[in-house]
Image 1 (cartoon, rainbow, N blue to C red):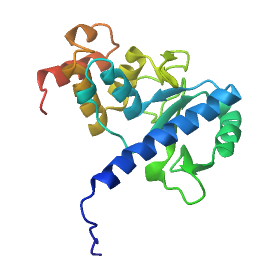
Image 2: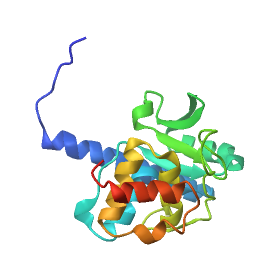
Image 3: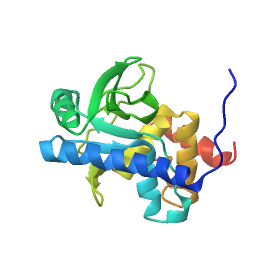
Image 4: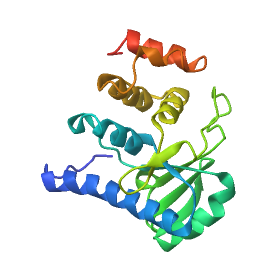
Length: 195
């Protein structure tokens, strides 16, 4: 299948970033209005933490990640449906597609507090109480975010951790604060910053 390329457009790039931000704000406002406890996780949480130190070091992300308690899923589903999101289970994960024609690529992805995403993970996700208020929504604490990223340890998680290291939000002193194998993983990133 041949991909048809559209011309380069700054407006299209800006629109992509704005759509993620709008989705994040709409989803978190709906949860706030419904009184559902949550915390923003993933690339948006990393960007928010990094922006506190160096706004030029932030990365964009294409989706929204939320930490919820499983017991709050029904209330969250109701609140998010009122904001235009459609709940789906995709590959065993809970997603909120942006409307009936939404895709997983631009969804709100849910991870559950106190649970593991994959059974072989070192630690369960933190609780939503390990969070703090940001400008417009709740964001997972830096320590909880680092644990999540070191537990998942995918390519994008390692990139996010390198970004946190680069701006000085975390450093080698964190290795002893973290449980094994998370401290070892952080040390490996420190030892090979480009790889």
